[in-house]
View 1 (cartoon, rainbow, N blue to C red):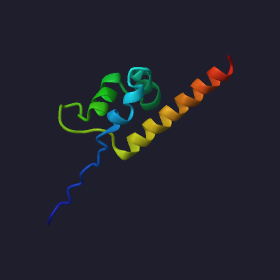
View 2 (view 1 turned 120 degrees about the vertical axis):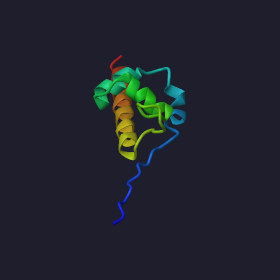
View 3 (view 1 turned 45 degrees about the vertical axis):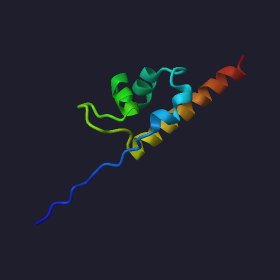
View 4 (view 1 turned 60 degrees about the horizontal axis):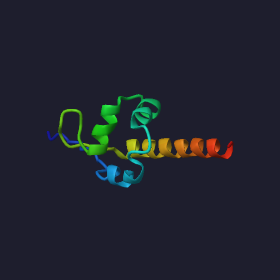
Length: 84
């Protein structure tokens, strides 16, 4: 009997896609607020490695969660700007 090996799909270039805002926002707060994880977890994801030094990155679900987090943050920034 053969066992099916399930491989995870990772999105490898997320860090490149967010390079324009990389130093402008708090990734620690993004990790904690939107993922419930540590900043090192998020930095590893951005660098395309898993916690054990192997290859990794964002799964499609995590990438969507990051997209939603950045959209929420942009909405919050816009509201703050509009209140000035």
